[in-house]
Image (cartoon, rainbow, N blue to C red; front, side, top):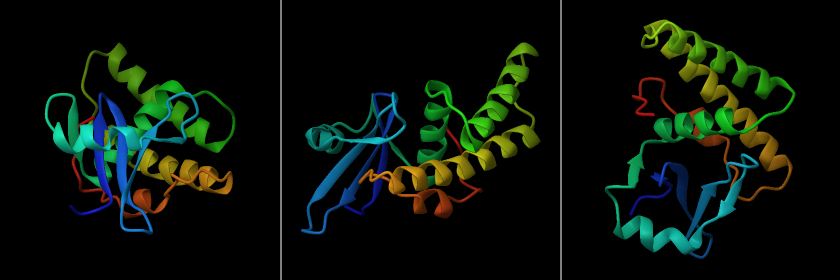
Length: 148
C-alpha cells in the first residue's frame, strides 16, 4: 500500500499515513474544529470496505473535499474565513441562478480551496496538530478533477 492514502469515510475526509515505526496511522477531519482527530480504530474499516460509503480520493480531491467541509461547518475571522466566504458567495450565486458553476468559477473555487488548505494546515501545525500536513495542498495538482 502506498502512503499517504486519502479517502472519504462516510462523507468525511480521512487519510492514512505511515508512522516512523513502519505502521499506519489514520486521521479523520473533525468538522467541529477543522483539525484532525486520530482515527486508528477505522483503519481496518477503510482498508476492507472500499466502496459504498468509503471512497479513495486523489490528493487534489482530498484537499477539495476537506476545504468544502471546513468552509461549510466552520465560522471565524481572518484571511482563511474571508476566503471561505468568497467561495460561499460563488456557491450561493450559482444556486440562486439554478445553474452549474462556470468554468471560471469552478477554477476559482478549486484555487481558493488549495490555498485555504495550506493556510489552515499551517495554522494547525503551529498549534501542534500532529495530523496537519500543508504539503498535500501545495502538491495537489490543479488539473485533478474534483468529485465533491
